[in-house]
Length: 188
Image (cartoon, rainbow, N blue to C red; front, side, top):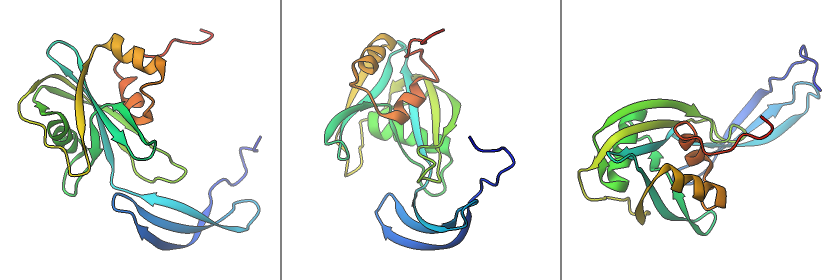
């Protein structure tokens, strides 16, 4: 265990841009270890902030999306989400993404807070929102890299796909657990 008085902050000696991966920009930082003084090369994947939306229709069903994900090579069930475009606030991005991915909009919006997707390699945040009483107001307009099916799910159905492992997307789970009680308490 580390003594609380020990230095824990690494110091950046230099940075270098790496490849532009479209939605991510690679950066390499040479960081000085706080205790050993050696310099280590570290990878950072820069991005704009992200958003995830727990959207509930007027019947209290959650508007979920199902889509193929290239990383896992499988279809996933998720909350609607995406990236904050230049000039947008996270709320504006959340409202836009919900409308584009599902055709749902309107309703009453609440900010639920933000999480760090993976602070080991990502410097950005993922903002979570709750949209209550949304209705279908338009056709879906997914982006060119998206093919999305809408799934209207009750809290019980969400709990079932979480417990079965069918829903494992950590950012969707993080947003959903701010609204629903999805996991049983262990030892309490």
